[in-house]
Image (cartoon, rainbow, N blue to C red; front, side):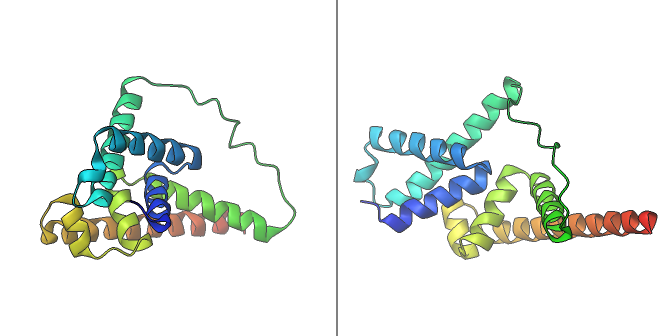
Length: 167
């Protein structure tokens, strides 16, 4: 029913939503379980239906997390050992900044950006998937791009101020 490429795209979509590999696998697996329980194979567009299940399931998980605050048991991410090579340290900083910028976006904004920028979906295809007008998707995409530009400018200004203070 699904091609190998479809599974990879669905995993990438889940990863874009969750930003964690393990959570993406869990999200995809539980969504596939729901799909097969509801006899989704009898649908005309099963891939689109599965994308919708993934999105709705992700939203349900986020709502549940917001209701019940849980402590993160992971290791302290701020405990980074200093590395002598400046290139590696610069790479870590840019990765942190990228994560910070993307975390400032709402889940639906990240989803839209992921589908458009990473997966290469057209605005028309995204509007069909979300059942919303093309103009709405275009305006949302414009606002997301504007938000990203402003965040990048803010980070560049902070970098410049940091370098000025250390010089």
